[in-house]
Each structure stands twice: as C-alpha cells, then as structure tokens.
Length: 54
Image (cartoon, rainbow, N blue to C red; front, side):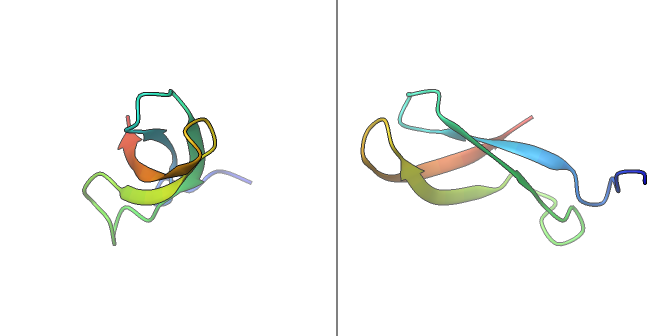
C-alpha cells in the first residue's frame, strides 16, 4: 500500500538545543505551514516548543 503524500511523515525538533526529535504525520491541506507544538523534552525535563524540520 502506497504512502499518501497528503499526510507526510515529519520530524519535530526541540528548540531547547538538545537535538531531541519526535516523529509524526501532518495533513498538508489543513496545515500548509510549518508545525509548532509544545511537547516534553526529556533531556531538559520540561515542555518546550518543537518545530517542524524539513
């Protein structure tokens, strides 16, 4: 079964500078811009902003 390019796999990289990443999928039709989410970074032990990396 082919992967749908409407929902690509993206990497979310921590803005805390630790290099920690999450991998998720997003809907390009609903979110055409780069995604930003607040998630937990275990290396700094707190929630920080994670930005989409291309």
